[in-house]
Image (cartoon, rainbow, N blue to C red; front, top):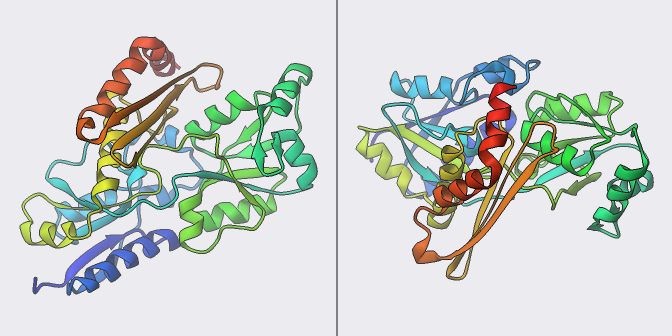
Length: 326
């Protein structure tokens, strides 16, 4: 195509890194582009937890508006921030190959004491220590920071005696707040820190924590009627990642989940099979329902919806209703 593609991005370091990656990938296809910086409401409000803002797509709606107003041609998003239903007039043009889907704990203080408290022994996670502490300890001085209700619920399910504080802002701001705080640690998405080279040495993978649907995936959106831009961006699509992203988003959509619901999902492809894991927790982490399914690659259509239906039938409806009433 001859036109210069205008790439819309938030102005945080991570968002710019992602948009620049798309720009570089387009260049390999012989397509020129420029970055257009747009500030989102989610970046401006660094205090209010996401679930209290009452808006789905808090980090994407400003870019969506810019697309619909023809100020930009494509928007680059962290896909986990994208609502399950795109704004009318927009379409998904591509998803890039997934980076790490894991959550990590960036920690402070005495490593030996922290690892003993968490049950992280010889580089392995064990429930023995944490279960023992849950039974014998009424209060723990450990405080972990995150504003994600999903991370909070999973953490409290495993460590019910810990305290949790809210932590907002871009990754640079959150790392700074952690260093200035009395917290023992904070939870981050591995992909976000690793992409911009900011993952601290004092961090560990939370292998037991199931990620947000589509965590670690970059998504490109464009206008529905912009065939030239769609075809240009579609050249960057990674089919396997797109399949997994669709399954995870369908699971989330069927559960009608958003930032205020502790829903996790992960789909992976190995050989000719698709493996799916999902869970739903109460806000306090006391209730947890999980689902684990494996299907042939050719039968993956509808996997997300089917998994969600099973989860709802096995007690998920009651948890979701309690969250709505809360």
